[in-house]
Length: 365
Ligand code: F6R
Image (tube, rainbow, N blue to C red; front, side, top):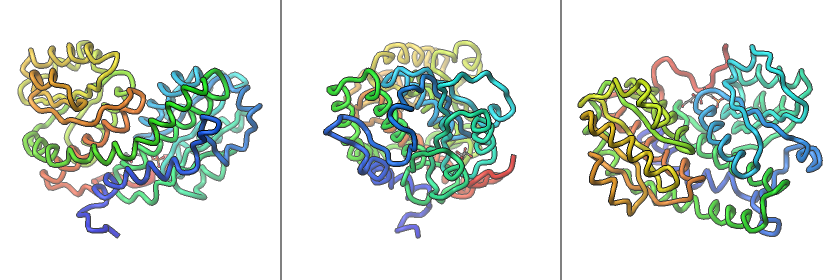
């Protein structure tokens, strides 16, 4: 059921205000200034003993895990490692007691993620799933977990499941933080910001016409760079993956400052760079990375906070999004990148919902 949308991908992009609301429903407690989860199956006492976290996943879910690393570090002060499930399953890393594994997966059926989970369980570590499909294999095999409640995701390219994973990781980080050092006041502030998020995503979707215009302008490029820093380094990776998957254009995501260590050699007048540059502590640094690209003749598309007039002087095209706290900016910034990939793919005549060579769930190794 497409509800009047031409493709599932577009429908699912537009469902994000609602899917985020569904992920948060009943999970925010003003009374305790924390998040609450029914299915972790670990006592608060057990959870306080956790002193290290491993996040494992594949593809887009792995990008959500990378955002989760910043969140858990900042809110819960927990050391985090993010592992590709396909790598973790064949490694034999020394894992200390007190380590918790989160397996992040939309489908709950990804073969590598399941194998990594089983391997960690076998060694006696507690495992939790962050999963969309209810009753899926990974949801059943983990000791407990959190469902995304994003509703069915039909488009092969993951969109709403990604933002639901990131918001769920934000709530989990709040919860772990509040079990430790995070103050009541800080918890209350974060809850307020989370509650405002669905409306901000609705406002972000107003960039659609502008993104469509920009997509048509750049649809003939053969290479793209996506650059961002800190919380939005994963946004750069995810934006690049969306473009690769559905438009078959080669795209690379990089931490913006790494570009000068190699990828800058790719820059010429035919290679657009997409800069993700929200207001925040690294804004000026990203701006100087942008200047380096412009100095080499590369076209620049910037995703920036509304009201940022500085960026318009340098970037060729700017997509404005609502200003949010840095921690939540990956959720807002990914929306124009999903739309950009969608429109470039359409322009090139690609099948956006069923890209070649890809399956919705990867149940083989
Ligand atoms: C990207 C995409 C894939 C999946 C990956 C993991 O748009 O859909 O990269 O994210 O195959 O799938 P799940 O989350 O089902 O484990």
